[in-house]
Image (cartoon, rainbow, N blue to C red):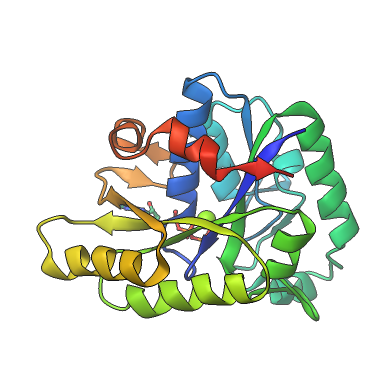
Length: 239
Ligand SMILES: Nc1ncnc2c1ncn2[C@@H]1O[C@H](COP(=O)(O)OP(=O)(O)OP(=O)(O)O)[C@@H](O)[C@H]1O
Ligand SMILES: [Mg+2]
């Protein structure tokens, strides 16, 4: 049986892909055969007659994952909007059964799965089916990735408490772009820890990183300095 984790952002663009790529690299570099799954991606680039899902391409490159982009991302849309709208604009009916089947197929091959959501927890994938419904359908616990600065207490607490209210297990929180010399960042970490009673980890601001251009910067080293593989494995649950 595979073990897995679902990475949920407090918002779009908070660094889910960067953090997930780091986690996958950490696992794979320690010989844990981990794979990435991003079920629905909006804003894919169109190259040589096919959509290239940028997040998936970045994580595949950084983690050196021997899997096809199509298998890791069954639905790629060019339009950079919420999945339900991108699907509507591009005349595609997102089928949850296909997402579940693709996830099952990967689980047969990889003992560790890290899934990245789209946007935040209450993003519709289709009418009346939200990202949190998928988290529950894939039987995964979550880790919340949020910004380190002003506004993150509210966004993080809303995400954590809503997840818990619908029966999703929250394993931990990662604040991205953290600056330990910033009083607001320091207090955010402390306050979120006190209010949630969860472990709060941090990833600093990185240099020369770009998801679209596949620039990896110093992410590999930074992730090793800030996260340990034992915690990551403890966070994962059989799925
Ligand atoms: N720690 C960091 N330091 C510097 N830049 C970062 C950091 N984390 C993310 N970025 C940059 O911020 C942007 C958004 O990051 P990322 O793509 O990981 O967000 P996301 O939450 O996955 O977005 P989406 O909702 O589109 O999937 C990217 O251009 C990335 O290079
Ligand atoms: Mg992303």
